[in-house]
Every structure is written in C-alpha cells, then in structure tokens.
Length: 78
Image (cartoon, rainbow, N blue to C red):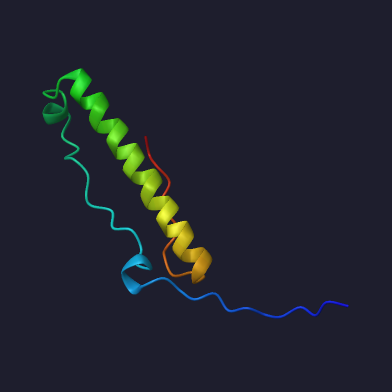
C-alpha cells in the first residue's frame, strides 16, 4: 500500500513574493479628464483594467503560497 509523504513547497525568491504595487490613478478633476480625447481615454481605461487584473492575480498567487501576505484588493468603483 502506498504511503503519503508530505512535501514542502519551496517558496519563490523574495522579489517574486512581494505584493503588487498599485500607484495612484489619474486626477479625479472632471475638467482635466474632459480634455483627454475619447480614443486615448478608452486606451487608458483598458490599460488600467489590465494592470488591475494582473496585480490582483499576483496578489492571489502570493497569498496562495503564503496565506494572508497581501491585503484583499479593493473593489473597483467604476
């Protein structure tokens, strides 16, 4: 009969175990946002959403390897 053996997973290097950094976004001033052309604004939104998804994935991976290392991501307001 096979015997189960516990295997300890080695953790990745410390720089890969760091929580994602989330920089401050663009100013909330409506008059400034209105000056950004629509196509460029749409591109900025796509990049920001992709950045958020990647940062959330990295934090989930770090938390899977070392539970509760990164805070839960804040819910998007828009």
